[in-house]
Image (tube, rainbow, N blue to C red; front, side):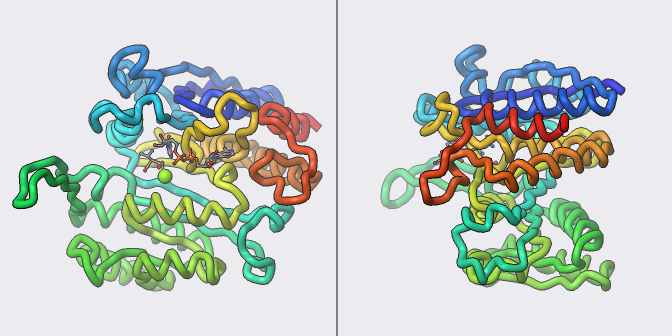
Length: 359
Ligand SMILES: NC(=O)c1ccc[n+]([C@@H]2O[C@H](COP(=O)([O-])OP(=O)(O)OC[C@H]3O[C@@H](n4cnc5c(N)ncnc54)[C@H](O)[C@@H]3O)[C@@H](O)[C@H]2O)c1
Ligand SMILES: CC(C)[C@H](C(=O)O)[C@@H](O)C(=O)O
Ligand SMILES: [Mg+2]
């Protein structure tokens, strides 16, 4: 079968890590008899440089005509002083919104061989860790009313957090359904002691919990959740939360896995079309040096096979190959831990994973 994939390499380390992921997909294609056809499209800083805007219409059109979208990362210091509506990040928010991708699944899994790279004490993670953050992705403060105005103390700026009942219901449904297929444990993270939008969030979650009596659902305030994630992360299975809280908690959760370079994500909507991207950014500090860990992007491509194309054996093969490489002690610098062991470059790590797949 032929699958059409729109590829957004983006900025910084984006092109380096995406190339490793598409080469992994090609090996899967050879091995299992599929063809993956890639169409490179522009978004982010590279799109601004080439076209003047962070998300050209052509990019949205090609993404919509594709079976799936693979993204590296966008942004960098070169574009940091542009006005908000022209920043690379605006392109990312725009594509998520244009494709209706309201559910962002961010799994934080601690691979057993990486226990040493995890920042937590060994006894805290001795049973392993497998958390799924379900982040609302097209609402909240990221998309609320914003602006600047003259206040009584001169210039002021504001951003607004706003959630409607249907927006909360649809992300809650994804979370409850996902929890049902896992350990049936859901933590809904909010700030209902302060924010009205969180109080509505909580009301909707409680109402929907009645439809899922088999799922144990509890509320956790976001400040406590941030603390509990490092104190005792194993208490969590599925976490559902708003756009901004999910952004912050997923970066925090990544350190449990050893590095942000290990955390994949899938952004999904009502249809089959989704966007698959690592959780991390364009890492300008290491761009072009062969130091980036491509694993988050490679596992994101695996999530694409699983969710978009229903290719379960092929997705399992990627997960198994990544685990095998880690078991052999192969490491990019971010997961090397202390001790000065020899590390692999971005391409060498991709090569090692592809060699496992071919073995
Ligand atoms: N999805 C995205 O496109 C996305 C996500 C987050 C940040 N950003 C953008 O990326 C730019 C840089 O942001 P930042 O520095 O705050 O976050 P970042 O995630 O890019 O980097 C944070 C730190 O993690 C390291 N890191 C990130 N990915 C890595 C990888 N694969 N392998 C090894 N190390 C890795 C970086 O070297 C850096 O030290 C900003 O412009 C930001 O807006 C984009
Ligand atoms: C770059 C930025 C817009 C983005 C977000 O906040 O959603 C990133 O941090 C992420 O986690 O995907
Ligand atoms: Mg983020």
